[in-house]
Length: 191
Image (cartoon, rainbow, N blue to C red; front, side):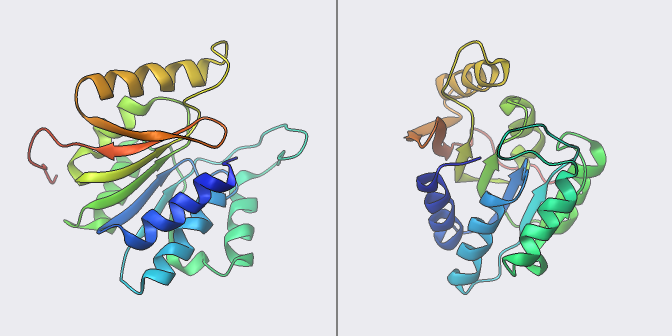
């Protein structure tokens, strides 16, 4: 779950960024809805692709027996379901990568939202050819308890990408969400 200030940033980036929006890990759709409202208010044609494998989660406030069912209900309730291309898969499968590329065509991604399993390098590598230089990046679970393996992995991978010059930090927001930009070191490769 993302903090309100992160959702406002996602709305703003989706509204103002050139290019499409790609989200990895939609869960119940808070960021998806914020991005869809930003796209709607932009008045421009932008694809919004979200990848979510589904499943269930036990949590005191956010628990669900069926993530995909609840995600689809939330998108419909917010009246943005028709704006979202939902890929029901893991982000790293060849089928998901191919579906994203088919949906986006040769146009770049201007906003990438990652709120999945902490494997940031895997996901940025999988979609590198689609990310515009200067693409806004919102990566959740960067800061928090070092004992949380997802947070520890995300932090280590974001820090490594930043040290390599692939990421440029804007700041930390909400409950530990990293926000910054993608910096391309090589020309895009469209597969």
